[in-house]
Length: 274
Image (cartoon, rainbow, N blue to C red; front, side, top):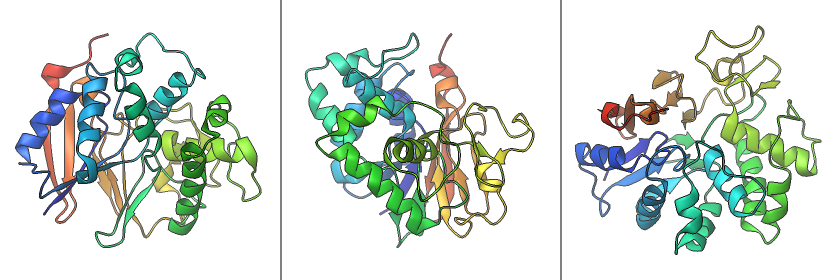
């Protein structure tokens, strides 16, 4: 049995199927980890969501910002943007089944045997594994509960910018959401800079990639994440970034966790136009 972590799909179904052929994926034998953003902007969001859902226990995905955006739209708390490709999901006969399944997905997945932790975007420097798991559980309980609709009323926004254990209510949940699903840069004290999206070196002065903060509490963890296509496939001590820009015609990447071997396919023929 092999376990493969795969970067952001964003509705790119055909590249996924091609990559699974390359790794000779067998759902009876192997397991897939997805870094989130299963849907949106790519051409086949519905088909992609249906396929990952159909894998059952053979696959696990964490929630990404585009996945949460879809859920917010479905609850009437957000509108479909010009470049969104989510209408097919909203209008599908099995929409409620798919959306209910999506809402149950975790924000963090940790496997103590493999020694890897997966999130969509990042962790603020104050969070070790225990704190990250606690925060993920808080948000997951809300999303899986009966009052999840209220969460989407307050999900969007860039504040608060810094973690405090005293954060409460919507502010606390929004900060947790932004870290797990949107984080790229922060300063040495953990102040988030959510507007910067380019590769390292393009961020405002005083900010750095979240994983480069000195003495961050998660430094001893092996962390897999996606979200940051401008960073691309990237590896440093304990850090495995897997969003290699499939949507933009670059590559779709898989990492076999047992031996840390990479597999990738070119996505030039599937490149998003416009």
